[in-house]
Length: 94
Image 1 (cartoon, rainbow, N blue to C red):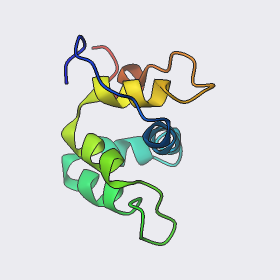
Image 2 (tube, rainbow, N blue to C red; image 1 turned 135 degrees about the vertical axis):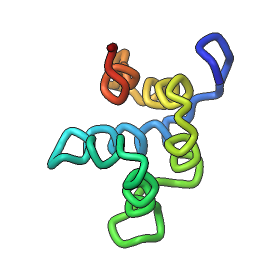
Image 3 (cartoon, rainbow, N blue to C red; image 1 turned 30 degrees about the vertical axis):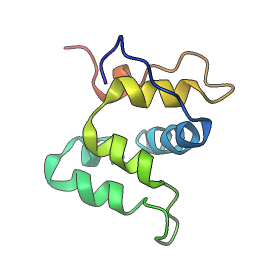
């Protein structure tokens, strides 16, 4: 999805993604997520069905796709998220 395309945001997926991105701010997790070698394993450990996992299939798919516009739309669907700007946390301006 690109910036101008329409998406039906899901608050459920948004809550999963919001939790995921908040966890990135602790304990060097952001570096693990940004590392192509560690990224898939990092996401897989948080997949629903695993001990402590909470990410559903759509959230996992989005995280593996790098579709930051759609990720941001889902996060913003959660009441209280304000205008979360995932793009600046995960991919800061150069």
